[in-house]
Image 1: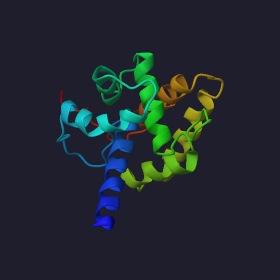
Image 2: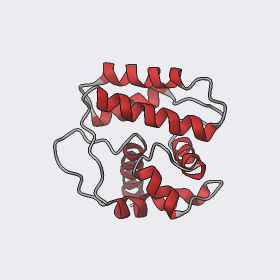
Image 3: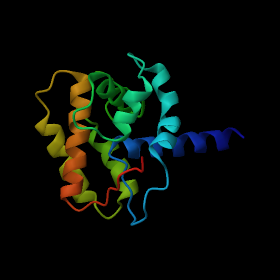
Image 4: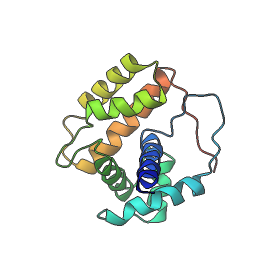
Length: 157
């Protein structure tokens, strides 16, 4: 039973990480989850965040709103920190862990993934606000992945 809970938590963490990086999917299928379903999946991760996000902030993050509220950006940072993609005290994504997640979804795009993570970290290296850095790097990665031909669907509202 303990092994099953660990596997469930790992799968949930991977799903949430995919959402943090732009709701990526490696296949041609339309997304099967609605925004509300994804928000419900992610909502519990906000319990340990300061400030605790409101539902509207989670929705903004899930929809990858470029002009998101600061609270939304802080929730993104909190989740990235929880999954060790943006370690505590750091203002950039952990390249190895982020690339590992990208490779799980796009195993044949490792070189592109590495280039994108490095480039986006570099573009936002002067940012001093952890929430702005987290959001900026995530949005940069989303734009760069789309521009590089990664298949990234939008969620159904």
